[in-house]
Image (cartoon, rainbow, N blue to C red):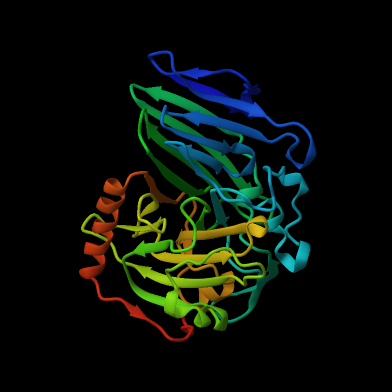
Length: 385
């Protein structure tokens, strides 16, 4: 049975109203936070009995944090609580003010652009300038509110759907329809996103899923397991850590981030995977993603002091997180015609035993063995803008 929790057009906003499974188990309830920078933020508490997630319809349908089998799924950001988008100025700090609200387990970057801030100049076929603008870090979607949110329980399947519009006069109109699914008693969940160009003119679009993992999966000796054909350091700082690009150390105060771009290998089903395991391979957090629409994988290592944000990011994307103009010049940018949609699929898996972790990692190893890996010694001019 489907329950509408938010529908702005119908003036529906249901807080503190439990959504129940057929057996009477509470699977969802929405709360509204009060006070501080979180004032007015809605949090959807979702539980399948084993996996719990806290979703943020106020922040682009991001996933704030969760837990599986008692293991926390989160990271310790200096931004301790969800931030109402009204308090986020994307132009702050030279265009990286997006980080003022950054603390989610999963946050979308996009939809019109994502990546590093920079000037964006568009030209027509004759080379004439059509538009010029400065685009700040990681786009708008994470700081936009859903105008529709529902929870549906179909047998043992729990479905959360949300709709967020990213539009403005003279700036296009892209719509995100997000669907998150999980089953009762499962340690997995899926996200299927559909981005549609609602405008009457063609629109450029790109998306990146910033999936951020901290302790207990991240620690000294943790390993990123993924099957890729290319590994490219983003800059000289990444080159300095290339010999251990997928290995992790203990928190280090003052650590400067390192970023690596990768071409993910996919299995026969065209799905790729990246997983972070702890030092003993006793547990892991895995991100599976459909490669045909998410062909670019970025690894972000930010292992500073715990109180400064000890975290790593597994980031499947439609493009690499460079300025949009660079991605356009390299031919990676997607253009959606009026009414056209693009669909992105991801599956998140948590293993909490040595046996289940070994099974996951063995599958990744087999996929890598079937695909040669080339680790570049320097940034690639076609990948690093």
